[in-house]
Length: 116
Image 1: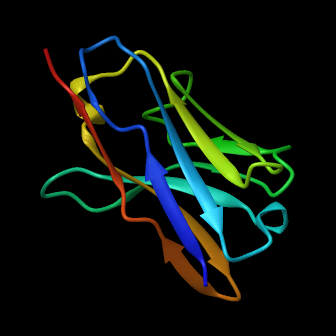
Image 2: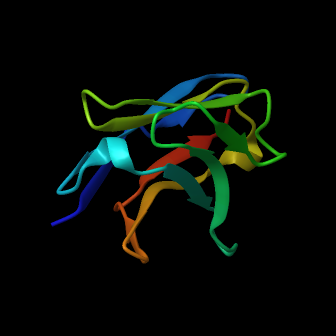
Image 3: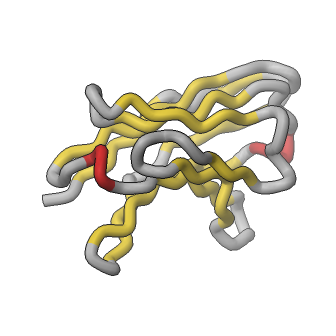
């Protein structure tokens, strides 16, 4: 079955960096686009970044452009989110997602807290 497992979340000071990972299994990873979302307390889940199956095209929310980078390693079945220049408003649970045969699969999330 499809499994997505995020890791790498932590407490970090403003201006700091983190790299999130999402390990995928149960499907042919290299055939599917992947996405990162986030959800802050009391807010709706929002799209952060997407990457195509081969990694050739990426897209970002305006709020993270120039600070976050999505990438993937198809040999390791893993998608990454490099987050630099973190701000308190980046505090959220971060989730990866794949859409396969019209069904949305989510990981359990990893918490990122940006605070001094």
